[in-house]
Length: 235
Image (tube, rainbow, N blue to C red; front, side, top):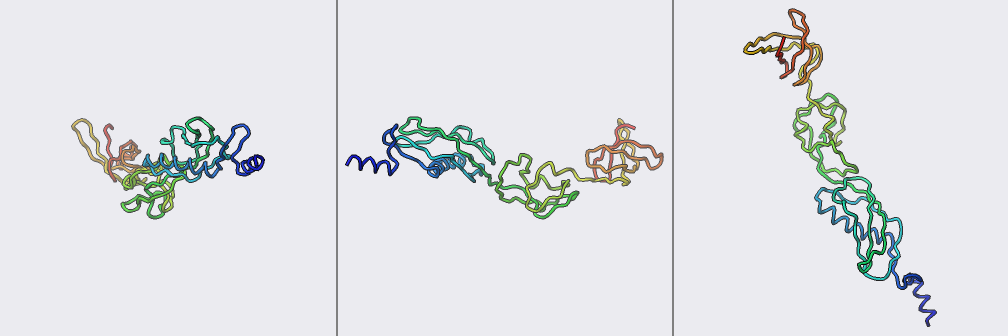
């Protein structure tokens, strides 16, 4: 009878010569337990992060008893992407094992995207950019937060409809083009003089560009203050 009992114990995987009565947790059981705890932590951050994939490298053979889990700190600060998560396993409150779990996170958030294909040089109007829920596999630190950030800006590259917009793709629109005749105001103390100049290069509001005086042909720099308007503070 003792031989039969021993054979049965070995068959069901509950006996270990060094630990006595033991239990084996399969990789899928470990993954399920860790994912459940990780999900609770990520949900608490309210950042839209979720587990896309979680992999444990091995089964765990543990002493018999109640199993609890502790995840390494810092999960709350994670971004979308691949991570290694150290996990400590306790049996009846005592440390029984440590394992490194591979985790891939995605982030579901509302992102400003073009409502249509945008061509390089286009000025974005209201309605050209909308919010859309996307699943990001990696962080986009330069992404826009609000569609209004893009309104009135020029796009400096072709962007497909639905592609997350990045701030570095936007710039102030050109309001003066090379060869345009623009009105120039000279301010010196209380003196104000108006004249006309020809732009020698494209310009955006706030930029200084070279102009040629239409009468004297003198070249000077002026700051673009509005479409078709420049200002000079010294001559």
